[in-house]
Structures are given as C-alpha cells and as structure tokens.
Amino acid sequence: MSMKEELIAKIQNKTLTMGVCGLGYVGLPLAVDKAKHGFKTIGFDVQKEKVDMVNAGKNYIGDVVDADLQELVGNGMLRATTDFSFVSDVDFIAICVPTPLDAHQQPDISYVKNSAIAISKHLTKGTMVVLESTTYPGTTEELLLPILEEGSGLKCGEDFYLGFSPERVDPGNLIYKTSNTPKVVGAVGADAAEVISMVYSSILDSEVHTVSCPAVAEMEKILENTYRNINIGLINEMAILCNKMGINIWEVVDAAKTKPYGFQAFYPGPGLGGHCIPLDPYYLSWKAREYGFHTSMIESSMMVNDRMPEYTVERSGKILNRHKKALNGSKVLVLGVAYKQDIDDYRESPAIKVIEEFEKTGAEISFYDPFVAKYRDEKHQWHEGLTEINPDVIKQFDMVIITTAHTTVDYEMVTTCGVPVFDCKNVTKNLTNRENIEVL
Image (cartoon, rainbow, N blue to C red; front, side):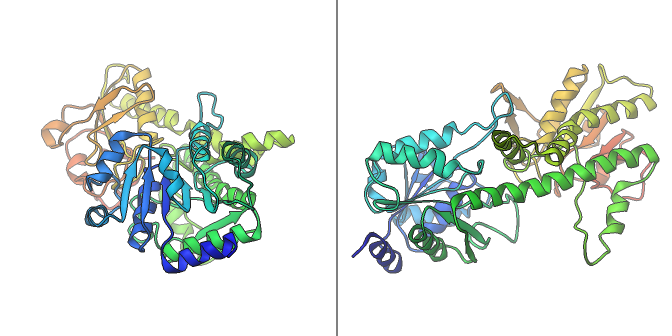
C-alpha cells in the first residue's frame, strides 16, 4: 500500500498513534480528545512538571474533565514524556506551543522552531506533522518544512505529510470545547490535506473544513482574531467618546444589538487579554511589511486597545479627584486578574497591565480574584492576591476597580461599602443603588 493508504487504514482501524507537542491550554485538551476517541496518544512537553502531572492523572487545564484524564492515563491510552525520541513511535503529531511576542512586539516563533528541530531528529517515514500554534502566514512552508526535511532526511509529500490546522480554544466556554468546534485544515499537497482532515474528523464531533494550502489556514486564523481586535478597538474608541459626551456606551450597545441583522455586539473594557486577540494582529502587520504593505486599519485598532489600560487609570484618577484624593498614595483594589470571566488564565490580561499602570502613579495596589490566587509578571515575580473580600476589607480601600466580570463575586456587597467603584465590565448594571458606581 502507499503511504496514504496505510495511514487511512490506521485511522479507520484506530491503530494510529497520536502525538501532541505542548501540553498547555490547547495541547492537553487535544490529547485528551484523541485518546477518548480510541487512539493511543503521547504528549510531549519540555516542562517536566506538566509531564509528571499528566502521568499522575492530575489535571491543570479548566477545559479538561478530571475524571477523563485519570481514566485515560489509567488505561494506558494517554501518557506524557519529555523524551522526544518517542516521536518515532507516533504516526501523527500536532505542535501546540506558545507563539508570543518578543520585547519589540515582533513574533517570537522560537518555541515552534525548537519543537520542529526536536521532532525532525526522530521523524520517521509515514508521519503526519501538523502545526496548530497561531502564527503568521507562511510559517508552515517557510519555516517548518525545511527544518523537518533537513533534520530527518525525508521528503515532504513523499515520506511525510505536513499541514496547519489553527487551534480554536475559548477557555471557559460552556458550549464550545475542542471536540465540538469546527476545524480548518490546510496542508502541503492534496493527499496530505485529505489524510490530515480525516484524522481530525475521527477525533472531533464537528465539521472539518479543508482549504487549499497551509497559508490560507494560517491567514484565516489571523482574520478571526483581527476581526475581533478591530471591532473591540472600535467600541473602545466609542466608549472614550461617549464618556466625553456623557453617554452610557453599554446602553448604546444594548440598543444597537436589537437590530436582527448587520450588527454584532462587542463591548469595551480595560484592554485585551488572552493569547490570541492581543497578539495575532501584530503577526499579520509584521508579515505585511515584508510585502511593503501597512495594515493601517489593524494598526489603528491595536493602538486604541493597547492604550486602554492607561486610559483606565486616567479615569480612575479623575474618580479619586472627585473624592478629593490623589492616585499617589491611594489604596486601590483590583477585582479580577484573569483575562476573562470565570477562568484562571491570566495570559496577556489587561488587568495586570492596569495594575502596572497604577503602580507607576504611586498608588498602593491589591487584587482579589476567586480563580487566580497569585500571578507571575513578565519579570517572573509572583504577586499574591487577597484570600477573601468582605465589607471590612473593602472599606480599607480608597477605590475598587472591576477589571474581570467573575460571576462568583458579590458586587452588590462591594458597591454598598461607601467606596467609589469603577466598573470596567458593566457587571453592576442591574444594581439599583448606583451612588458610588461609575462605568467605563
């Protein structure tokens, strides 16, 4: 049989061994789904702590069910390792590693590059390699392909298949998880696209949409998040204008979304958070410059969104001024450091950037987050939060700022302690006593 026929047979009879490189928010749920659908799966990660936790059946990702992980590890369907020599045992490996920005706001694809090098040393004939990490268009064919060919001595399309399938993970989403979110696949060659798409169809309870090449799949992922970035930038700019005009932007959006067509609601906030939306537009604008093209609309929205933490602190200063207090020396309580509600993920959280802006003014900052007891900043320093809040705790502060809309916080209690509250998420909209409340 040909390589394609052998792989199809392995998929159909579930003798295909799966691999996942990177056991974070994307990789671990994907590995669990593969194993749940009857495929033996090996997870690879350079962090021994994560590997040990997986092998002990201890879950550290919110979107993974604890019992599922324990059962899959217990019955031998899932195991983890730091030893990349086991790549030679897999027929399919997905690369799910971070793609952050560097200090100059340029793409840092070192994790992808290092993963590709490690995989290439043990790549065997008849293996499928798929990049899932969000990146700039061209990464799969311009970066991964030559690394894999040079390191393995194999030929893409003849000896192994290569593709790109962008991760679509929304931490905390109660409806859409990895298993039921539609998947996009782009690969080098028609045979690769067919077989890789078949793999995802066999492990996901959702549609798999195949596109003509990896670059299309890479670009569509950038489009998804740039679309959101631009619209959030628009609504943040509208929020700043509405504040100057004395208009409640939240009421404006609620009114606009009554239109059943042509409008999708986006909401303002203290900035953008998470791994994708704040970062992806930078990847695209960086790549665009290679072609002498400036993404003016995208860059404008990025400027607005990047300024929101600073604007949030400026507004806070005005609130304190009205109470005859200065930011310098004031005690400010930040409610929520996770980047979205009801999760423990604080990657790129705007709340942390707000805290840093507050600290520049000389304000004394504390935070409380029911999901994040402590966080580590870019300098790798840990910051401990309050363990609880109650009226006695709230009254010790000069102001409270709500930066994450956690549903487990008693906001009515917070707002009735006589302390000014700056609500950046409109979580207090249904409270009738609004004497101490100001919204973004």
